[in-house]
Image 1 (cartoon, rainbow, N blue to C red):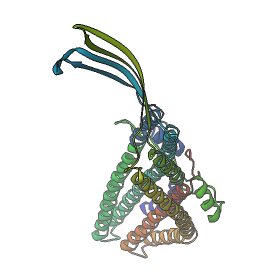
Image 2 (cartoon, rainbow, N blue to C red):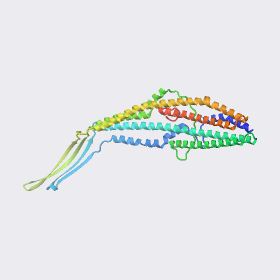
Image 3 (cartoon, rainbow, N blue to C red):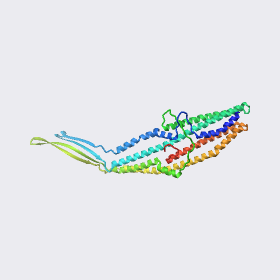
Image 4 (cartoon, rainbow, N blue to C red):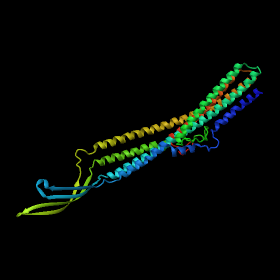
Length: 432
């Protein structure tokens, strides 16, 4: 009876594993999170992204500062002749001066700050793109780890079932005790493998929860699958074109190039000195002696003062040279980034194609053949035609193949996630 139960259970093992590969692990009593929910939560709560988002205030403050005019200067002055023997003579002045920015410096500084703010917005968008990539990769890694735990659990169940069969056959005197001991070793090995996969699941979940910015103690279940969704309909050329049009890191470099142009324009204007105009009220008190009679005379004067540095030695040539060098550096990085993006899309597209090919091999050749081999070997063992070593080896081959199948499914999803990050489009869901 034990032999029949084992064979029947073995025949049902392959469909059970196939079903397990389709569904993600869940947790009773908690609403599981789907991939779009995970990505949305990460975008809203990731600590590093929130910190970079707060830097918007720095850029806005810079724009406010760029639009400010120089503060006026209050000037007070006074003099006395007491130290030169003319104590009756003195003067007092009160004035105010204002520096005026020439050559459109204020407008150009505002243009420069606008470029910096635009560059920051694209940098923020690029960080969001990279966070989506990390969150989706971590999500699929957690799904893979959960399915590996389920696969290891089924391996333990099958080995326990095999141990029951060998124990019955030993009691019946059909096999030596060594065969049962071999099954015990295999059971212990599978239990150890399950512990390792459980630890890997914990590590994968921890990384995902960290990216999501979840509070310590929160560990929601995940709902997802490694199975491929709809087939990719866009060609490699289409994806390269979309990447050139939509990649935020490329947009950030284009904005940086615009900032370089504004910086050069401002550097030329900085070579033109500013004009300082002032208005002052002066009171002069003098004394004179006529016929032995000393008299005082007080005069009030209004002065208009204009001053401007003479650009004889410094015409801000170094500033212009520095701005031009930064602009040239940005242009070079922009050209290099455009080429790198095309290579990145091409590599991701090729990886996805290769992953699809590997999956097709598993589905059409490897898994069906191993299922048949396992069933035949188990039936042969039930009939006493082969020894326990053949059964153990065939089970190892079968579970290793399913482990490879899981890895192939994960590689395919990972390639798809990298492709959508490279081309800046949404292929898997999650607010691209």
